[in-house]
Picture (cartoon, rainbow, N blue to C red):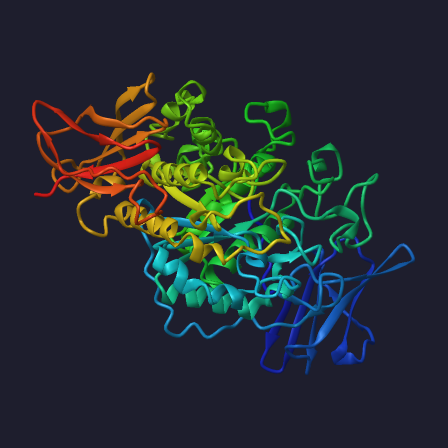
Length: 590
């Protein structure tokens, strides 16, 4: 199933006018109307392949327009599916230039084993005025904060033009336009360039499993044709259209629809200099029911599209990271396309937040369940741990009837001492486990409650819990081996050396090549018990230095800190004091 390509689809700005081209295969006639012709109509010419085109001399950027489609006696006013900007999602298309001054944008890609991702929602991350959505410019104002925290990749929830003035971004109406309430295309590109200037890459969440909801879309029955009550040329017109979000699954079998999506991939990576893509709900792109092993409902053309998305993305930028949200139970999602896989770099490990909640739900020994966590720590796909993104919270796990981890384990008391201790245990596990670690906005300063699209982050907590932020910063530094003594945290290897199910203490060994400055030992006490002398095995004899102690009073004056010195290991075993609800990280010097 090849890719049918058509150049210059949309409104393409030339030196002396604009070339308009639109796909409307069932239209009888098509015209364009806009501010450049006083909202009169100028007829487009059929190209005899479903596309219509016209060059309008004198038309220029900033002018508004719509297409007028005639079919069966109807006159349909439609926005341009390829428009780069809109007055509002319910308003008019706006002619926009795809050019941008990228001078000085020399971002050096970050190897996947060194990436630390921070997921955020543009509308709520930094919202100086509670009555107004946050914008890309508000986000730019927090980039120095994120750089200081140590994250080097920002994953932003979808920013394409959306149906409502507030939303998560997954009810997309036009995939090529950047939401005007966030500042529009130019502000978005300025954000990308500003992030790059600070050594931070940008991963964009994109949505192709559905558009809509249905009847609010100009794409719905775009040129007047449809079958039964389905959506016309951009959608399946049978049972394959059905998704949990309406009957709006794009028709991945139509070459023109595939090009629509693949050209969007090209735009984000080539034109917008994006460093990664997180593709939403790929399971609903490859199976109608969202099932992993269900051949009767599989969409072979959806699987092919996923392969094409990855092939094109990596052809444009071989270092781009592509992340799938699937079922986290299929190696083929992250197998190379040449081996029959979908070709993604990594996929969200959807079970990770759940096992963390089981382990951190209580510090009372009988209530602590470590079984799920012990199974998740060494898990990997295709024997590659970096083919999974691991996290304690995401926009999904912190919403949809659930709440953030600290709210789940301490309802109504998400800033309590217990919640603070457990927050650092969660951060330690995420940042010391093989995989690509991801933080969710505000977790580093104890943002509680559930995620929503209307409540801005409480930045006053960044002062109140500055010590917790410092702890996250220290963990990220260790994860990235900033001090050249924890290289093993970037390595692929893990061995759970110690699992004390009675006392709820675990210890695991991380390494890359092994040896001093590489081997790392992480010890976590999930219980409320304190141990004056706790013994675990170490990979090697000699002196092991404490690099991180989550109970340090510098992180929080209420913590029950116990002085822990260097550990002298002889005959493979070492002893040390172990505070309650604490995480310790050890490594060796030369």
